[in-house]
Length: 157
Image (tube, rainbow, N blue to C red; front, side, top):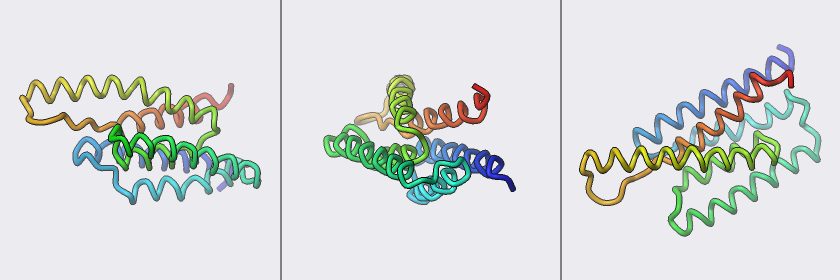
């Protein structure tokens, strides 16, 4: 298996893991740790396959993930998002260049607004009691799929 094939295989595995996280977040309002761990463990394999396995590259990925985790852990502390969402953002930050992580966050914000409106409407339509529980992991995973899709389909640009 060539390194290019391995890179595409790991991106495919990431896409599958993100689809599973969408399903579990909608169904159970949880993003399972085994999914986030699998995503985190796949990142070094992707770095190796895509030629980004230098100490500098690894350090930048780890720093980006740590900053992402700290920022969203603060949001978790104030009740703005769930712990699974924080972990999903952080492990996705391991996969992408820091500029792509900023785009990931921007896309997740836009998609998250749409997801919030949809789930608030469903909650109101069903006359649910209490606050609506928004599966924000859906927006995070969809934005991750978007960035992953760009890597797969726009590799000639």
